[in-house]
Length: 515
Ligand SMILES: Cc1cc2nc3c(=O)[nH]c(=O)nc-3n(C[C@H](O)[C@H](O)[C@H](O)COP(=O)(O)O)c2cc1C
Ligand code: SF4
Image 1 (cartoon, rainbow, N blue to C red):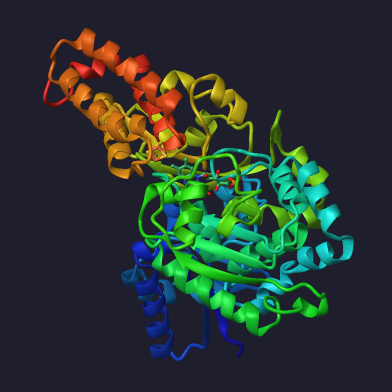
Image 2 (image 1 turned 45 degrees about the vertical axis):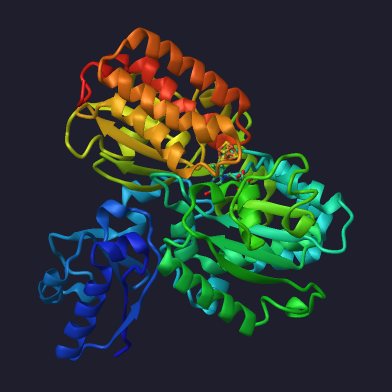
């Protein structure tokens, strides 16, 4: 009898709640019962609230079981797991789970579906088709497609990717580079990690396409050091791609050379800022550079460099495979395509939801997220990482659109959405924002380096009830200075969360601990 294929994710979130132990228990149970199984360690579908989510291939379906523990395994076998048998943990076919099918999977469509380290599986799911297409249509047409798709950077700033690629392509130089930004330092974000662990060849293909389009034959992959499993998976994928001729000299006889070097970050938030990342890649301390020149003109080692976020890059293959118009048809206004929203904090159904821009926060938090995990009222939502504003419940109907968020003093950033219920004290959150900046500041400019430390002190005085009005005015003035005079968005945007607390939650200063 053919071995039954069982999928158990090997992805950081799933592993953190016992996926490895579940895989071991399944292997043990199969041995004890003399059952032939093929265990595939896939990536995650992103439904972290259901992890460990395992699947069994039955006919042409994959039957899912959620929140499986090692202790469940003998019982699951007895219930006929191998033929998709009934059990309390059975969720039904994975491609019929409403939480998953209601999404618009563009960059993440292979995540969960394939064996991340099987080149054959990758090839069977459109793998390297877009690179082959790029070779066919030529570099200029690739850049035109990316520009026409309306793709903007998913790392935070939302800069049009086509313009960036065109700038690098048009800047004469003897050497150009692709630098993939996988520093993923924003609080409540994990989309880069899920993608890299679930579809590493997809990222390799995307970087090669970027290199081919702009004339770069070297790529650097800047990975945060806190992702050891990602490092393992991605390094292995690099080796396999190289062995199979998808990296290196003369890729598949195309005449195009491209290779990628993996570089581990050293645990600094500001190293995610593109110029600090380039300094770090050059082996220096991760300090922000003055701009101009932008990296597209003078980047890594002074050469024209495409710096793109992991999700930006992996949005490109489908633009070539399915067409720029298909991508542009998703979204609203100037926010085209999809974003991988990451729901975390006090939320019942946390995880990654890839949806077209234009969806509201309420739809994400209530329909997908199921409200707070505590069952209490949502008090505030922080969107876009530690530099993002805290939005009150009244603003949950704001559509997720870059410009609509800027209009309310907020930002979408990398799509992290952290939910807080009504037990949180927002004055403490404002303090946290300033403290985070004080700890993570690279120190190059005074408003950020000194301002953030003074900011913590002013907020402490307000919390302690010392001359609240005068300190309030001082804090507003300090925010003006940081916003107007900081060299990069670290100091320039820390005022966003602070101001939002002053605007929407000022009463929390009198109820904060220490008041
Ligand atoms: C303090 C700070 C931290 C940042 N961290 C990241 C990060 O972790 N990952 C990322 O892709 N972009 C990060 N960015 C944005 C990058 O500077 C840059 O805009 C981005 O990598 C460009 O790629 P994209 O156009 O594909 O978004 C950060 C920016 C700032 C100011
Ligand atoms: S704003 Fe902060 S992180 Fe950015 S350059 Fe100035 S000191 Fe460095």
